[in-house]
Picture (cartoon, rainbow, N blue to C red):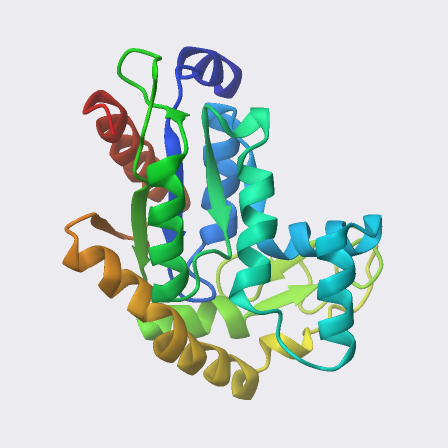
Amino acid sequence: MAKESANDTARGIGPVILLGPPGAGKGTQAKQIVDHYGVPQISTGDLLRDHVARGTELGLEAKSIMARGELVPDELMYGIVATRLREADCQHGFVLDGFPRTAAQAGWLDAFLEKEVFENGSENNPERCPPVVIQLLVDYTQLLLRLTGRRSCPTCGRLYNIHFQPPLVDELCDVDGSKLVIRDDDREEVISERLAAYETQTKPVADYYRVQRRLIAINADRPKEDVTAQIFGVIDRHCRAGC
């Protein structure tokens, strides 16, 4: 079904931005979009690591900054993102992962997309195409259950959730019987800090798009398949409207 859908929707979907706090399911849903529409997922973290590993001019500059314990400035990240979005596989559309994280980055992205050309879904013709921005809404208590309940197998890497997808035997991996572990960033005190950071730093991005009446919020507390169906519906309507 996914292959058929990808072929059917290869007409182009334009840029897609998923917003939501940690544990909202952005990674899971991004993969569904990638598989369904045949567009790439663009992760700023992966891009940065790639530039550093290849020793590009941007990568060397970023490596020097990180070596001093400083954050990579927006201006440098803009160059890295722009270089990737201009590659041929992005012309039908893409899913942004980890960007924009601030209202300033959202403003830069709008300006970039104003000058660039991506295919929309109406007639398969290149046009300037604003992103479809989808916010995943999840109840705070549900977020805590999703995040604090996560367990992983240190041997095979299989993931579980003691509340929603528990192992057959408590705290043991179904595959190899290894004792499951809690990642440091899944501990409750760390999660509280991550959610607070989201509210402070990233929520203004949603406000930026809301003011422009471009933000589409969906209920991500529902089963994963239902959330995926809602997202596909939003993207398809965006395409039919010619972006």
